[in-house]
Length: 236
Image (cartoon, rainbow, N blue to C red; front, side, top):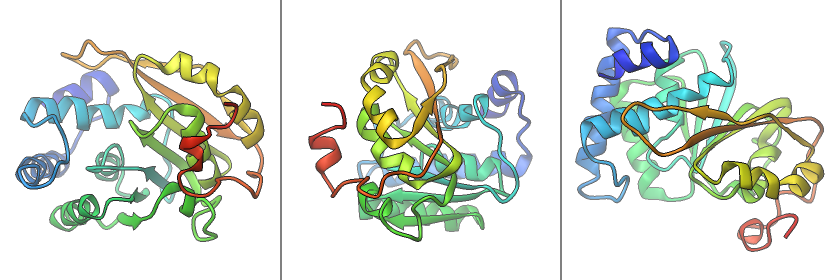
């Protein structure tokens, strides 16, 4: 099913090996979810469409070159980073998560699938954004269902290279969140592009991709200490 929908929606052909990897990922997610709260979506079709296909839709707004560095902020059970690591084996994918149990699951999937281009990072975004090993180091920064955009921009933009892109995967509040982010965009030197609507098969919910280009270096004071961005979003 995933192979057909990926071809129809994204014009991407999955190899047999990639199909097998996605099937294994789905099985591991269902198995581990009986012990760790990873997802509320547990049926194979829901996982294929709402997790895997949804993750891959970022190709509607950005292309990837061999050697690109991508970081998935607050990856949870690996979305959208791990599906993209499967699809693009020449892209270096870092999966950042603050919850240790979730990272244990992700590392298990990486090992099970034999992904050589994916690695985990146990950190909060506020800390990673001030770490010289990660600050300004990524071509693409992704986040899905992590926080509202004014907060999310403070997590994401410090990690991006100048000229790099942040992509936030959002639901029905996307346009409202963009409007609320004007001050954060100005202070953090980000330029937001018109949001792109995503139409997933069998899904009625509104999905949007919000792309923000990093224009200049992030001021040194951002991101602020852990917890502050969410408690006092820029502009509020």
